[in-house]
Amino acid sequence: MRAIVCTRYGPPEVLRLADVRKPAPKDDEVLVRVRATTVSAADCEIRRFDFAPWIWLPLRLALGVFRPRRRVLGQEFAGDVEGVGSAVTSFAPGDRVFGTTGLGLGAHAEYVCVREDPATGAMAPMPAGVDYAEAAAIPYGGGEALGFLRKAGVGGGQRILVNGAGGSFGTFAVQLAKILGAHVTAVDGAGKLEMLRGLGADVVVDYAREDVTARHETWDVIFDIVRGTRSDRMVRRLAESGWLVMANPGFMQMARAWSASRGTRKRWSIAGVGGTKEDLVYLAGLVEDGRLHAVIDRRYPLEQMAEAHRYAETGAKLGNIVVTVA
Image (cartoon, rainbow, N blue to C red; front, top):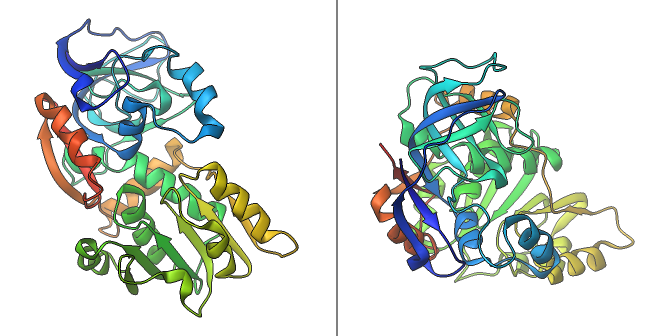
């Protein structure tokens, strides 16, 4: 089968198209014919191994000390079930499925094996009425955004700020927060603001023109997706008992959040609880009802995976980058 392989950490040029052995499903695994996958900021971080110091060592041990242990990267997929192991009961050949492999990776290929009940990642029937490209863009960004919003208890009447709202996490967070009944302020670059308004954001802010933390207003929840922001300033803009949830924090962000929240009822977290099969089923229902959709900026064929990575690293993408495999 064709796959994009990564034999060393580095720039997009380390990725190459190769013929590799087609996987065979174990007893508890499902063999998926991948029709579409994605390139996210996380995929780029794994490729160049660019992580905050506090998680650098455990991830290096997990993913490969000197070179990638899993040569085929990629976390999101949508496709067709081609075969199942003898112990699999919830999927059958011909099923259209979508999901995420988590740190198991392997989705940047024509086939991937996924455990029926994986320790990380999840898989579920594709939502009806969407193509493979849109389905592939939902599991990671949608599942993680849902987990973070649930962690903070986002609900009706609350005010939420999404910082870095124009990417895969952010575009789902804006939509899901509105579905949950919140008032949403979305922060990103000028080129993304009109799109964010279209997703339902009540207020949009161009970060290049205004520091939103200098405003004299507070939010019940701040969802910060940008690495390197001044989390102490974010904490000060929280309402009493508010939540700061950070999707991609560095060590100093966590330290500042801890320091700024001491002696208050304000809370902060670096982890959501999302990405389960139940979450995917919930997200699929919202998609089928027309209440949620994946924002797709560009589509690339599998052969242009390096170009997709280069574009992802510009920071200019609107929502998601999809790679068509079949």
